[in-house]
Image (cartoon, rainbow, N blue to C red):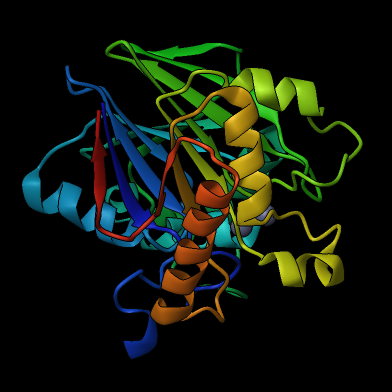
Length: 280
Ligand SMILES: [Zn+2]
Ligand SMILES: [Zn+2]
């Protein structure tokens, strides 16, 4: 299984010289199994470059797009996703119901030009919005299980199983707060148990979280504690705060690694970096 990060920024794009190393695009992830089955997770602004690479390399058709939730930073790139304009492509949309509805109603079926100059007649790919999301969902040789997020408006976390490996992708999840309809501590621990990699939102610092409770995000200490309880040995921190520059992100990582060491935990910890891949 190969996981590639096309966007790892939280909330709003943060381009510029100060974020060039970690990247400024919002959430978009690519999951590919060894046999070539392909899934895109979220249509944040990172999906623009991913779509351009599909067109350039004439690859990855049909496209499976899996959505975590409906917030703008996870959908805003869709109108810049070149395959959506290309009649040679088929796109199948899965995931959280609200996210599918917002993408279909407010972006795909939009009939006016209030937000964007190009209307949906130009989105000429064959786009299918799957009404139901089974759990697990099987796409080719990838099995995807879902878990409800603790996040305003809820949403889905995904656990990808392929090639004998497991990866959990949990963004926009507040470990420290129980939302109505969200996961319980036991459920999230079971969801993460024995995954090879846990990719989790770590938008806020421990010093910031009290002022941002109920904003729907976590700290690296909360993520590390979850990973430790679930027996995870590799943690990847994502949904970087837009105001955190490359140096700030590196300091955050250094502190996360210190926290792991000080507690005697055994796990690797790294940052999700735009353009980088994880090979399992
Ligand atoms: Zn987000
Ligand atoms: Zn969100």
